[in-house]
Image 1 (cartoon, one colour):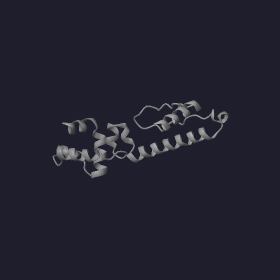
Image 2: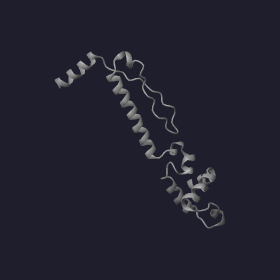
Image 3: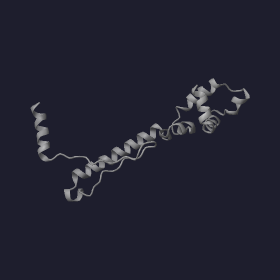
Image 4: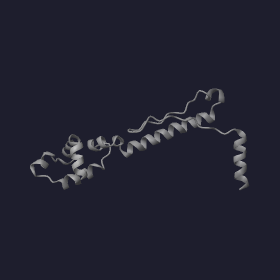
Length: 136
């Protein structure tokens, strides 16, 4: 049973979350005032609290961030890339050679991202691309 496994593997985190979010003491399970079914319902509720639940963070490191945190990191990465591409397009080649692609923000539970330099087309590649668009 999954509830028993959670109680056995993460007792401290579960106890902390039960007290913080529901004002329920895990010791009540041993005193007969709390059932495994009710603990299962409360654990299920804790699973919807990423970024706040100690239990969820112990079970999955990616849960340290909420959805909002992941969206903000994505927006930040997109802005950094947009600024990089703008500068790359609007600065002459001698000045833009020192520009490096900004690294994305590291997310919890994921390996350090390795920035990759984008490949830019030359003038002949752009002419061929737009030529194919016009002929279609």
